[in-house]
Image 1: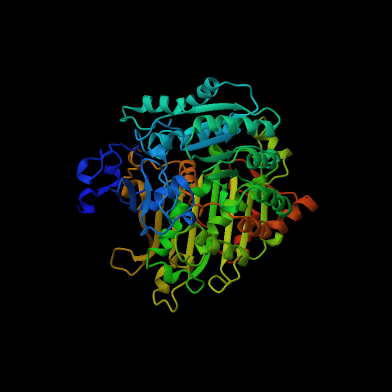
Image 2: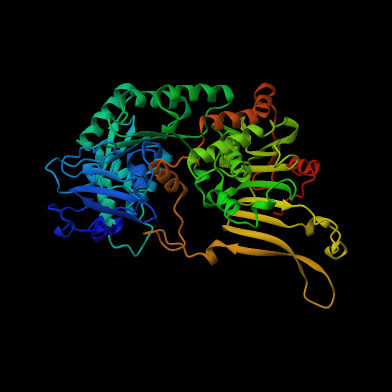
Length: 589
């Protein structure tokens, strides 16, 4: 019989009963979950399950990195009954995907532990993101969710804490309550106490109980203070790594406080884990704008030929948090360590890197680190630090006791052939008048412009500009010169506007139209998938600290006083002078 007679898309074969038309004597059903937008095909041969097409991505998601797999053209094959490998085969199809084929108890195929489970980040962001992924089918139904902290709680206590923050977000989904109950039933609590060595041993034991005989993978989300990070991570490495599957840890920013502390942190992590196991997360890199940077550059012919010093005059990166969005930086990190080191420099790296040879995470990281190493160290004379003033009786008054600045404006230069001489002006701050996240790419003047006299007094108004906006409304804007209607010949700058909410009706499986998944959902999904291109590698972390070290050293050694600005104002006046110093027009508020 032809093999194609029983060829089905994976989404169908996942639930289709196996009948005698495929020369099989087995009947089975598979747990369904969306894996990718690509089609997957499967068939049976000699009582063996064969995956091809996009099958390697399925393995990469739940059974290891792409490096562990053969090419997609290679057939993956394993005996359905015994689970034994054929000669030369890749990792086997685990029994947790095969219901009813054996009397062996089915356990969890993936375990996710949130260390620091009772903290604000875990309650407000991590657990809701995990539920959203579970609700939409991006986590296997048999997933095990573990909360770990020092508090003396029970499983039911943790479930009550989590339930208070969960929402289904989609009104028309009738099974929301059932999904929430199922998710909470898969949630367990471990009291780690004050000895993480014993605590991780207890966590490992509980995980093994839930996993059963399954070849399960493990993810540990370390939502803990920096001072506790090394102890927690090292004890996970010693006591709680997956005995058979892969183990991945998620580390929250900041990644150290300076070059030296970051080096020591990296050294400790790499003593227990391989680099491919470590995911340094910055939730701001999970925004759609960041993912769209490379798409815009490398999939549109109109931009890539112009993406260099010949045509681009300057680039401005703006991250402005309004009073309503402001979070206090009174923990000593400051905005440089918390946002500039990771989000700002990663954004610039993605915006300016050379084309990678593929979309593989390591290929993209290789290009990013080249840009970071080419970036000139930040001269303290090219940095303006600010700190907002609290009003009398304001709850933010404590900010004045912090040495961490709440605003930083800086001029960066990349010393390579593509970007030599192009200023990259950055301003990032909190407690400002407007919430705004934008990238402005201003192009050079048209040489010998014959319409110069028709543009007006300010020739800068006649330059083209590309604006990538994430907040307040996600959009792509292109400023072009256009004739003003009428009998005269007067030019005006007009905007070609792609406003996402008007143009796209986004439907992400079970997500509501126009509702984009939260950045934590995006990044946790990438960790499960083994996609690391939005996570900083150790050499990227070191290169970023090298750029910022002169300014941080100046702050630490000389206790540089930041310029004060009004809470709810426009930021330090010095930033305007910095823009003028480098000949860059201030982007309109």
